Length: 210
Image 1 (cartoon, rainbow, N blue to C red):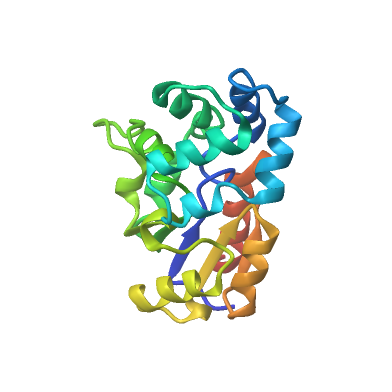
Image 2 (tube, rainbow, N blue to C red):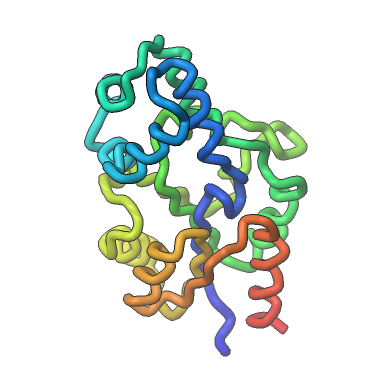
């Protein structure tokens, strides 16, 4: 078993815990719809996909959701409600990623949006106030790429730009569809259990470097 040269990490529920129900509940306070109804509409119609793939501006996305979710809400309150799903980073995640930095080429690949990125990139975790992403060799956000996982093109772009073959990389994500897509082009990929993500990933890495 060859030691991998690079690791591709997802963000949400891998390095940063999230709880989607908190955003559904937050939106319901500004809507005639219940949190359950809002969740169903967002999931069934994949309302976040155009925005996370860079096809909508912040304002277009806000108005898009206002229309689909019957929201009466200001921009500030919208961004706050939309970001309610973002929880606190895992304790020790900065130090753990820092320990991996000299050993592997670290890549972040996240389906995310500019509203969320504006928030999580400002979280200070390092001893000098650094954010987590300063430890990565390359950070990829879907809204900047114009692609979202599990589109095969998003993985191929990362491999091409970073100069690695699929076999030289490990990929960790909490979404089975994203994992299966990466596996289909030959990337060794692992579904992360959000309840034990860091310890689980470390256990897997230990099998490669032991």
